[in-house]
Amino acid sequence: MREIITLQCNECKNRNYTTTKNRKKHQDRLETSKFCNTCRKHTGHKEVK
Image (cartoon, rainbow, N blue to C red; front, side, top):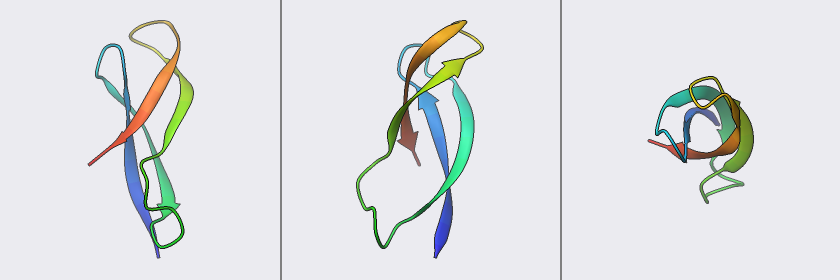
């Protein structure tokens, strides 16, 4: 079952993106590099509840 997750910027703590992932296959938290409109640059984004 795919669930909706939210990605939060590591620098400004703004919640910018939503995506889905399969929790049965990937239990660990997702971390990826995305563009943050608040910081105006590419930063790391981490999954939050």
